[in-house]
Image 1 (cartoon, one colour):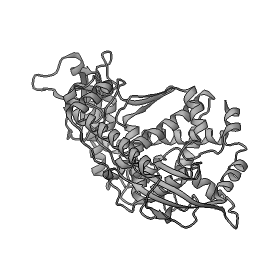
Image 2: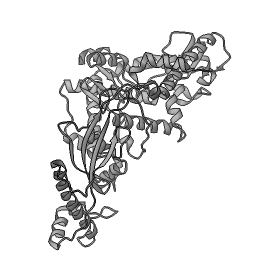
Image 3: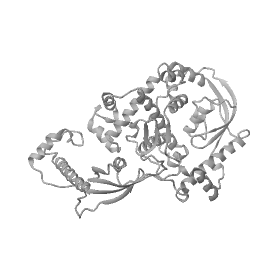
Image 4: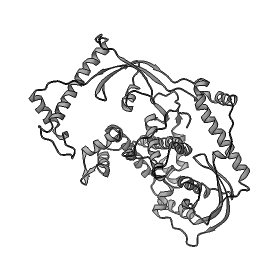
Length: 488
């Protein structure tokens, strides 16, 4: 398989993984609720690798922030929907999982030493020019990332890089030749951007219901969990001097001031007392857990009730994920920190996903139907008008001249030119990922007087977004892709 892919690839895409480091300092963005299939906690499965809702949210968030940088902070959720960011985020995760399946089949791993070396080389974790563990922990905490979560994601990234490096053997010369040829051609074109607001839509309830009838199995509720839980609030107890001294000696390396300097025992007194109180609280919570599990809670302790799902929970995502692992054989979760309290959770009922009624699915179905109808009508408009239209005429441009296309965003321009220079049609139309369509007419074509030589930078730009389609197809044939999330 490796040899086959090395031989048949036109070029290798190295940057298919949105690095976890992109989340650090970028902020979190989500798109709200979406529909799930039957697999609790997962939105897709590729071969043996599940893709979780949390991974999809983070992939979306990273993409959103990348687009927002391009648009100088003016990118919003409406534009994200137009650009199909949800679909792009899921596609990237699927591509990553395809490569990870291949890595697993060939027994490739990333050692702890490799992982540590990569983390310690990240400038965002530096202090005074060198890696600092306290800075590392603080940056992750500030960005709502646990060490386990960050390191697992980074390990995946490194494993993907290793695998792609193996596939890249001997491909560099062919890349440069292919791209050199493409960059040596320029076109003079006339073009016009068609947007959804150029078509009118009328949707009546009968049409909408007929659409839902055909696809009603796609509209499902989220799996949910009915739980009961008890809290152990923080304790404040008296501690002996020996306990305080022992705690200080055991934890002195982590007791630092705001500048990262180690604190003396007297300066760290408040932190020591807080740490000892937290240990006492956790110990009491373990007693409470045993009583709860035995059905021996005191009459004064009344468990709180809640129904949670992946998108709606009273707890943080990490704790919510743990709760979603509970089942009939493992009904209790040991004490977990939630805010200042410790909570002990009991699963009372699992409610699997089910098909929604028409009324439940109406809003979601309407959005999907309108989007489908909008796309159809826009393509009809493009077919009817591409042979004769008044558009904007360019000078001679290459596929790298997106900035010269008036009226198009940088993303639209790049996508349009990439597809235009692969097309064999002199006149036609090109649908974009965001739902817009561009009609065009190639007026003239010529070879550049000074042939463009594709350097490594040009190669990197052109291979930076998706895996080569041949490789994707080969991997998808080898590792089945199941998508459980609808509406993307």
